[in-house]
Image (cartoon, rainbow, N blue to C red; front, side):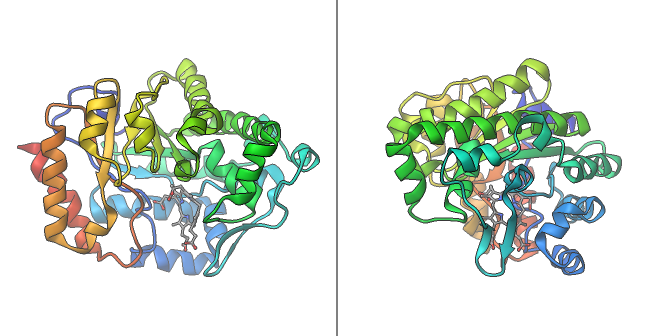
Length: 345
Ligand code: CP3
């Protein structure tokens, strides 16, 4: 149940500041690569609850984080809506038939029906909860509707988001219809993750920075808030972490609102600014630049600085984004032990 982690997310007093890492089950662990090789490919691994459980637990056992993040991917949602996901080696995720019009959208499975197809995720959660030590939390997650929609519309990762943006400015109604349909699936999906046993919800809006400030609420934040409100109404004891990447202007503008607990601050955003703007209303998570993990000294300096800034405020240590595959495991452990050292003082 991970009481310390959950309490910290809910803004309660804790004996130390907990820490966890995103993409912790990622490619930097040789143990992960071994299980993935056995599974054949990444999606097989997501579909296999026993193996997904094993890689979920690896970083907890090997690195000593306070919370495990469920092993899965945000893109299993559109896959189960009927979009045929594949991971092409060296190129990342691909959907063969991106959404071009309302007919394409209407063909996709929605709501509880789509969420009910993700049984392998719920089975993984149940297995993990059987095995996870009682003092560790399990974080379940989803992509924000906007971040999911970028893949569903572009068919793959993009640098320019030109197809989505063309839709945003020339056919906003269709984009809203896509976002609303994904939002409905995500509400049921996260509710089922909670019912399966996750302790914390995290919503990743990794491509938030693609949207201009004036449009961010309309096309992304408001849908994330809708999901959070739906869950908070029904499961108030489950903390919700919102993690939009690259939204310093949004934080600075004073427009952050919604019923959630923790705001994930990315590494490009000033923790001091975030503290001043929203640190009284939300627990802040973050925000070490993940590449600092290449150097132990650089890691220590950053951990100490974050601790100093956040002293007396509610906080959770985390990398400002995912961990890179060639980071030495020893350095990842150093990050965790430094967070523990400075926050126990
Ligand atoms: O610690 C964990 O590994 C938790 C599980 C997790 C994964 N993806 C596993 C994964 C989580 C929380 C995600 C979220 C995710 N997936 C996001 C949002 C967070 C973020 O990092 O911004 C996004 C945008 C995706 C979509 C996605 N999945 C991308 C862009 C990629 C990389 C493709 C590539 O070739 O580099 C993936 C694949 C992926 N998801 C991997 C892992 C461990 C790497 C797959 C592998 O090679 O084993």
